[in-house]
Length: 261
Length: 270
Image 1 (cartoon, rainbow over the protein chains, first blue to last red):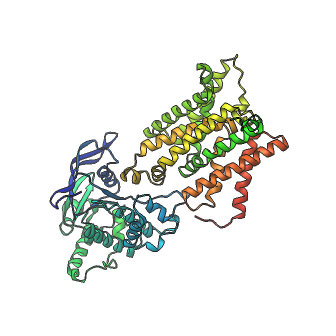
Image 2 (image 1 turned 45 degrees about the vertical axis):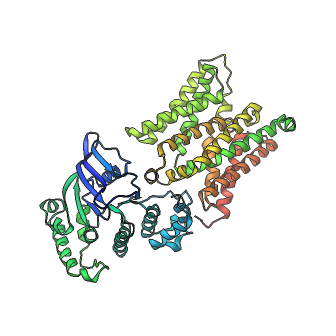
């Protein structure tokens, strides 16, 4: 597929999804271009997963339209893969199910840093290794658009920062667009180009630095979260030249809990 | 066929051949039942088989055909009802399974001139296997194995993760429908062997035994077929020597193999 950077890979035009007349996603418009990293944040039940499933084409929309670029190839990293332990499956076999040749599978695994696990059973992987395997499966298809649903779930805090950095690097290499859902506000704010705060409707969107001051954002997430992000972001701007190694130490753990509650 | 005549004329060899043919399709299907947690679903389909027998007599059609058709219908009803989510799936399965069984029994009682060997359908009557049954079993097995081979990647991917499979371009809903059809066919032919009440055991015990040893989905299928065949052969010899009922003897044999494998191999492998 060939598109210029200006052409959106996917554009949502007033998209709504309702279950039993109840809107779960309410008139959402957004677009993702090549090289964009768009992060969707929002409280539980905000319709984040439903929204990206609509983008993936596995959730029918009730109203509105989704325009996709011609022959758009999507790589999908689902949320929290529960593999049936009754199904014996090796990393190698799981990769092969993408239809990619073995050498490409191996290099995709190398790219996500888990090549040594090639012959291991998927049931013996840690949370972080599983996310990296799913990312490798998405990458081996050379997607135009990468869709990730809470990619860092079940990954320890150091691994989370590394994973988001990996996603950024992958975006640079493939020049693909990225849509991801995340709860890790402080990490996401540093790794993303554009944040969309979803609470059924788009309550606010914009650049990470601006959004934490947005009244709608403060209302959704509460003053403490907004403040901690603003503080964090100030810090981030300050140490931007150091590049990488996002430090989480300063951020009290309760930030995340507030979001979850 | 003339070379095979001495074999096919003997009821014991017909039973063994039929049993091995059923093990051939029960292996892969049993793996799907174990992987997708469909054991109760299989039970429900099996229970509806008796209704299929009654309908077969009513419309004077081939019994295998009417059983398969009834299973397919029930499978479609089940899938569409479970999508609506008005009732929990296990409740729905319980209602449909036993209603279908009850309807079957009631319907059969309205046909007094039809003498049906109920125990044959409930527990199987492998030793009464006819040449026509053998043709059904091996014809069905060829169709089923060909379908599974052809659709294997998609079926496997849809089993591992349905949404991922859909995003990767597999026609998941159609694949599931095909799996239902295969399921119905297998039940129609396997009912002859072990009967309505024991079909699920025949499907899941060899597959569960294979899980202990297999390191890939394909190996698990091959091993499940192997364990199924061992169960058929040893169950039938037991039936022959000890004069026990054939169907239950096969399930007992399968269970003994299961115990042996799980007892001997203590180390869990993936």
